[in-house]
Length: 484
Image (cartoon, rainbow, N blue to C red):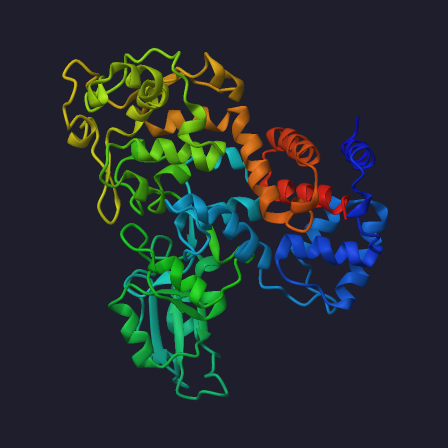
């Protein structure tokens, strides 16, 4: 039975007509727009969107809302879908409190980028990628000059061998900004490709020399097409790069602003340390102190929508339970067997994947070196001793087998574990549930649990097939719009 028919059947059967409102088509378009962006459309936008709604092509309708066209009708919403809805969806994954009230960071920016660019979202858990602002650093690729009517007075760039790429050629004809005659002329080349004409700029800038000089020492990032300076280009040990993007209210829907890049060097020194969202700096908070069980437990919450208590299964063998787990807490061995073992048997078997990581302002990876915290607090000497970053899935038997675990079922390191997470059915369902929580606020509290679960399952199935987070948001919002 199709979702729309299923929902209608539930509404009739459970007599929800008492809360169902008779909204006009215009009101439904407005509600659809608000659910995706968190802001209200104007009358002209509603009028332009209405024909698409009437055709029933909700995907095209949603795309036009989240990525509005450049037109006189649409007022640019500055990427509200990305900077509000998607950011609030991803931000709880980056803090233990699970709150949205945190600045933009490398994790949420990467989720936004994957969603905006419609990349296979499942790969975000393990692929070598992080999204950051794209520009030119003052310390390597940016030069600036006071306006000179004789551009030959500009100094040559020694790295440029093509005379036509030199500042005095590129900057010829560039004049100061009319509103600021003391402004500078910016000249930039990609330091790695100094003769690439596509990577060059020469333009007037709103900044004065003192303002530009100040950013040389702070590793400021100049974003050419916006003529703006981001606070820093560094992302390994500070979140200032992303906080500055947010402080300036830069448009996150702009593909020239946030771009994908490798985590190598920028976040990690070793390729084997890299695993997408799970090795971003923001996710590193879970690797701080403790015994590195936290990154596993919070991954269950973030990507499977389950707390450890819900995963408790005392039928699983405990041969990987570590030495810090008391087998007779309070002198009562039955407490261990009837409670403690239920979480630790499955968790300790998989959390070994994090054995080489620690966190100290940045996520630290030490290859082939198990961090001492993995084996400290020896309470039960015969317990398991972590000697590598191996992991093993034990919950593919027992009650937790219902999560539809993916592959592989054992391996080494976070990357292989994250690959398994990404191919688990529960991941799709959890993403669909969290998206529904983000966009179905108009109907969620007055809709039957059975109807909501039908929406989740329908859209989780689509998401498993297309792996498109943008479409998951649009399809889910459309499903809930049908309930209005």
